[in-house]
Every structure is written in C-alpha cells, then in structure tokens.
Image (cartoon, rainbow, N blue to C red; front, side, top):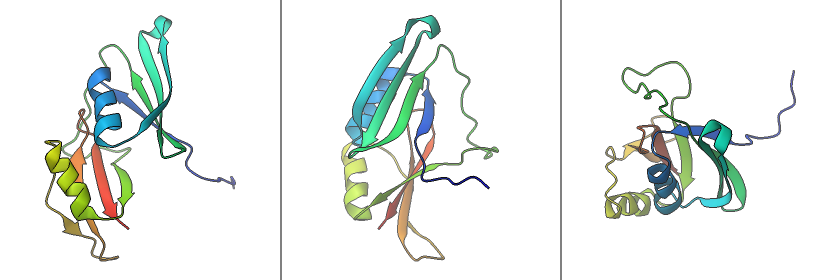
Length: 129
C-alpha cells in the first residue's frame, strides 16, 4: 500500500486562460505563485495557492474538448472548498454575478453547502465549516 501524505495539487485545463485566471484569482481568491508560458505547447501552466498552500495547476491548451457535465461522467466530479460562513460566501458569489444553486444541507453531517461552476462548467462546492 502507498503511504500518501496529502493531496498535492489539482490540475485544471481551461478553455479561456484569461477568463479562468480571473475567476480563480479574483472570485475564489487564489494567488499566483508561478506562471509559465510553454511556447512549444502554446500553453500556460500557472500554479495557484490558497493561503500559503499550493492547490491548483491551471493549464491552457489550444482547443481542448469541452467538459461533459450532464449526465455526470466518470472521473472528477467536483472540487470542494471549506468556508467559515456559507451565507457570506453566497453573498460574495452574488456580488460577483456568479450564479449558484440554492444552499442545501448535507443529510449526513447536517452542514450547509452550495454548488456553482467555474468558467468551463467545472462544478465547485463550498462547504460550511
């Protein structure tokens, strides 16, 4: 059995690099820790941190295929981030014009959560602490 320590990072391929970079930095609050343009691939690779923790690699490639969202397909289902207060988080989404589902309650933990999408329709969940 492998001895894993933690999740190192999540890699995301976006269709519009500038739009996705704006979303992940200005809406979700990630900070850029490294940004590289790889000429041979016509691709950006940008490392994003949440606080001081490296979390997301944002990639751009020429003409990536669209993500299948409905029906849900095998593979990564969604990203989930913890927030202290779901009402404050939803108000921030509203202020930024980000549409989202209504707040729901987890039937097992009784915690509140909400779903919305990144610019490429990758589902993102905010889960209250």
